Amino acid sequence: MEALKVWSSRPRRHCFSLASSSPPPTSESYLPVTFIRCCSSSSTSAAAAPKQGGRDIISSALSTSTSTSDRNTIHPIRLKKVEELRSKGFEPYAYSPPPELHNPLPPSSKTSLISLPLPPKPAPPQPISATNPTTDLQEKLFYLDSVGIDLIPLLTTHPPLITTSLSHIKSTITFLSTTIPLPPPALNRLVSLCPEILTLPLSSIISTITFLLREAHVRSHHLHRVIHRRPRLLTSDVKTRLRPTLYFLQGTIGISEINKHTHLLSCSVEDKLLPRIEYFNENIGIPYSDTMLIFRRFPSLFCYSIKENLEPKFNYFVVEMGRDSRELVEFPQYFSFSLENRIKPRHRRCSEKGVCLPLPAMLRSSEKRFLERLAVCCDSSMPMRNSPFWYYTHGDD
Figure 1 (spheres, rainbow, N blue to C red):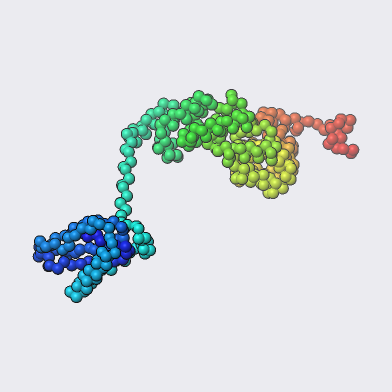
Figure 2 (figure 1 turned 180 degrees about the horizontal axis):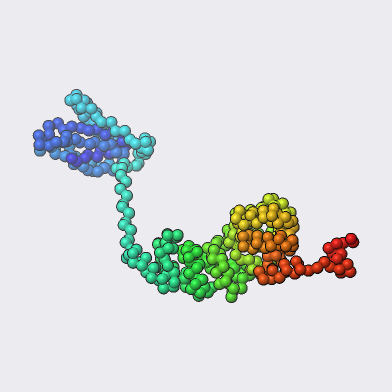
């Protein structure tokens, strides 16, 4: 089927489906039609009409510019064709343009066919890695085993190690063993306690080391000891954890030599430090200034559990020993001794002898020294009246 384009100054409004005058062959399953489209342009184009049954339906070519007489001639012909089709029982198909074409085109413009969007091109397939995941895992296993690290239990506690590249693991191990440097036992302990150290960016580890040296004033030859005592320092973020804790310990508590208590830098101020301050200040009833003095004298108290350490020892101190809480301000190291193995046995011996020793003398000394002091207190006689100890114990009586 061929189309005849007729150019006109009138905008395109309808597209008519015209049936041919002769019936189609019985072997054909379609109805031959001729499309007549009105276009607005000053130029012309030629088109040939399709042939059906050996007879030309329309065969003409417009090679000159459309004049007013041509337009007057084409319009009656088109109307006549429409009337013929209606008399034979055919109705013209009215073309309804899309919303964006409701506005008529200007007379000088030329109609064009609507171009349909092409289907999107399929995404190219992902390149297949030449490295076998099983082979890569075996290489990691062999390498870590060569430095004394067992990879199998680490995969259970930190699965991202499976996808971490071997080159990244090698660079991290090399940095830890040469720059800090950590000996193999300390390196094995670090990775066992904090396997995420092998997946962290190397820049994060470097920033932590720089913070410890410059802001926490840790000496370079003590760096491996600091890391060995508190491996969690290397996995703690400097901006959100290490630096805020440093400012709190120095500014609020008043700890000047923070390089001796670097193990506290990885603790959370909100979750760990403040609850212990509130326990001494609110639960025990020690004034805030004395509470700050307790933690300034013994900063490691921040690491003790409230329910498992502080509460049972304080209850025994008050109920069984009957002592004043002011002694805890002078000697907060009381909470560092074992309740069952040191505090209770020695307090019972002092109670049996009727002796009340100061907390440092009762708890700090060795077992032999403690028994000697206890014997001296039991075997000593009363001081003479002219002795200074008489007035200390009896006053003016």
